[in-house]
Length: 93
Image 1 (cartoon, rainbow, N blue to C red):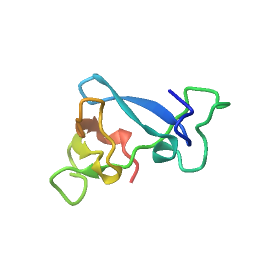
Image 2: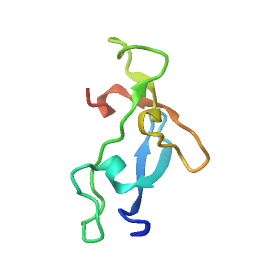
Image 3: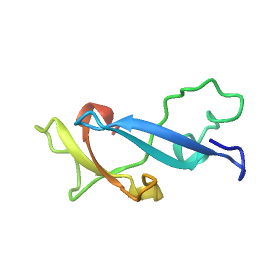
């Protein structure tokens, strides 16, 4: 989105379990600690977002979807949302 302030701000998009597209905006290192995001990067780039299972201590074994919170790094949508229902196959343990 912008190279200022350094290290730059990026918008990350993902689709939840219901098919709705969401945007998260934050500094590049929040999404890619190894410097994969920069002015010369070829976008789109696959990144990860730190999250925690909401209201639990682990992933439910038999559910196809799970509610997660992006609160570990304080990442939210522009309107402040931090909880999302996603498919389990979208998560990396």
